[in-house]
Length: 251
Image (cartoon, rainbow, N blue to C red; front, side, top):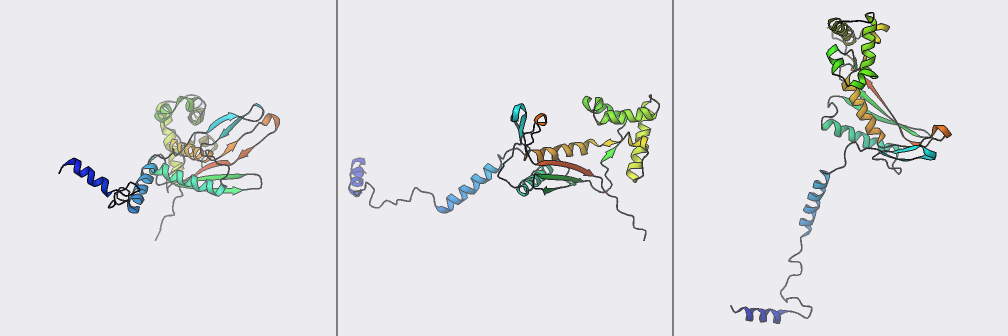
């Protein structure tokens, strides 16, 4: 067909609005079904680019020279109950990605007073798993330098060495750790000297640290003790509970 005739025929078919008489106005537009499917895909893709589970706090100038700390997910309009709900979701996400043990029960509860609110994290370890231990000499040396100088490992090492008169061999260190750890597993009472060697396990310390960070990102503090000024929105406490050993069935 002659292209000139085709163009002339189309011009004749146009209406006064400039459209073709047989043209479907919606022919090039997506259907409602297509729009809904696209919206679902968009929502799904955006969910994969979520903000981090633990968002760093922001420091700014506080009252009269102090430092104000605003949690990375802090929102003054949220209620304590709403904050705790979000904290629980963060804990589940950390367990899902393996940063927190999946078989540990971690609960969060809130207390609200006329002045402020508090979120309490309780880490319940599985049956038979203790929250404390005495490190072997190798575990002591493998710890971070700061922990060996002023941290938990320093406490354990000092306790073990003092129990042996200020000097101890690697073999005696490990034997002391083995005996005390056995008593811990059996639920036996420790002496004062033995308690001086006991610290929280690295696994528990890491879990408590993550729970503290999860909670604090929903809080705000702008305090200046020098002028007796305190402006805090939310307090966080974390405790770990050793797994309770079930009584043996003697039947």
